Image (tube, rainbow, N blue to C red; front, top):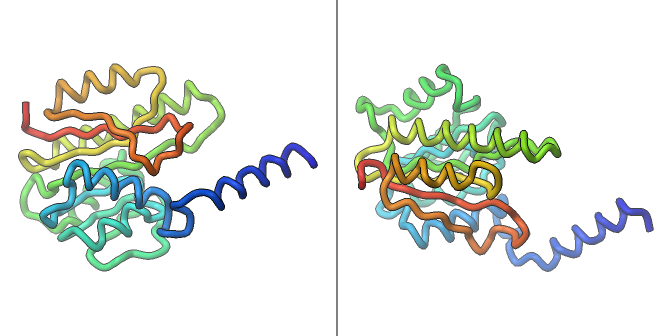
Length: 203
């Protein structure tokens, strides 16, 4: 058996053992479900900005629980659930940020109760570069959260253990209150990913 076929067989075996496989659009659905159970992100029904929405695991979960979800990604969602408004584009671009606000249809400057990000870099194989891009995506989310969250609104960002991670947590604690780093059970055991959450306007 070749190295590739061994790797494929191992992947298929892992998928068959995975209790989350096939139960939602993606495994991300269950990560958010577990984060929501711990931090009460969606109760009561709220207005949410979701960044890094494709393929739609978080969107599927949020669409049944929130008043309004604005879901942004570089890629279009295959399915847009009721209660979800999709924006295709790079959330770092000012023109896309203007479209997000217009899509929220809010006259107020701070239209969101929750800002969530599951954004991650396309893996290049260069861990230093990938970590730098991941931190850039986190910073984009934190800046938007500071601008758009209502008082006591919550931000959640995906981050990865590695260079700059501890600095990121310190920076979040200087800008947000109630900062907690959590790893949902649905995250793969060997994954470096974690989720950091905090509240805007809370010391």
